[in-house]
Amino acid sequence: MGGVAGEPEAKFGSTNGLQKEVQGAAARVHPVACRSLYACAGIRTWRSARFTRPRRLGFGVGYYAGSGFLRHRIVFPIHDNEGPLVAYAGRSIDGSEPRYLFPPGFRKSQVVFNLHRAVGEAAECAIVVEGFFDCLRVHQAGYRNVVALMGANLSDAQEKLLRERFQQLVLMLDGDEAGRRASQQVAARLRGKVSLSMVGLPSGRQPDQLSNEEIERILSRAGSALGA
Image 1 (cartoon, rainbow, N blue to C red):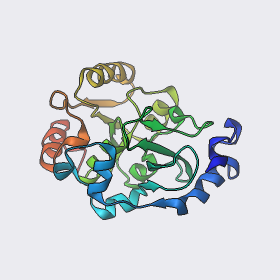
Image 2 (cartoon, helix red, strand yellow):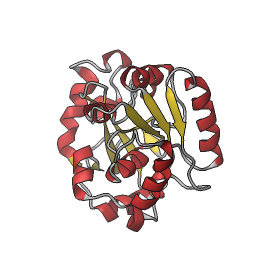
Image 3 (cartoon, rainbow, N blue to C red):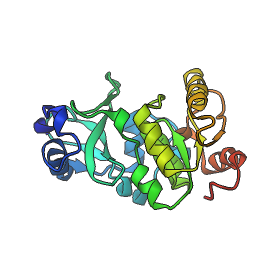
């Protein structure tokens, strides 16, 4: 995986370089048990928010046992809007910082996580969350048109990707102070450009900490366009 870490930015998204190295690393990503995934990630609510095996395997989430900067991390494959694999994000399992690592040369502001799957659902509406675990959790609850910003900020490129593909967006960012502030900021820049809804989470909660019933109840406020 060392080749990924040192790949120059100019090769991002090409059929060679970074993308080729990332694809070659897939064989060294080992699927992990649902409970182990949450235990490794330090998430205590795995019983109410665990992932099923098909969901985990469908997204390609696993434990990276190879060498390089992703060593001993939970990894999330990242695809561009057309579907090709372009990078892996690595989540620390021992509390070390940074919690998430991305390969040098990869700009997460240019990609929306799970966009290619959400578009494939032929939905006019997308649910927008912050993180990888949030996306997997909402997807497992039955809302396959969910995408993640890989953070709380919406870049110009991400805005363009979403507006070109969806007529309606539902913001479901974290329920902490930072998440609510981010929701207001994202809503301010999107308002008038696309049909927009915002759903509030319980204080201090994140989508990946919610049960199926809680997710359904919260998203029902956004109207019938979602369709679980």
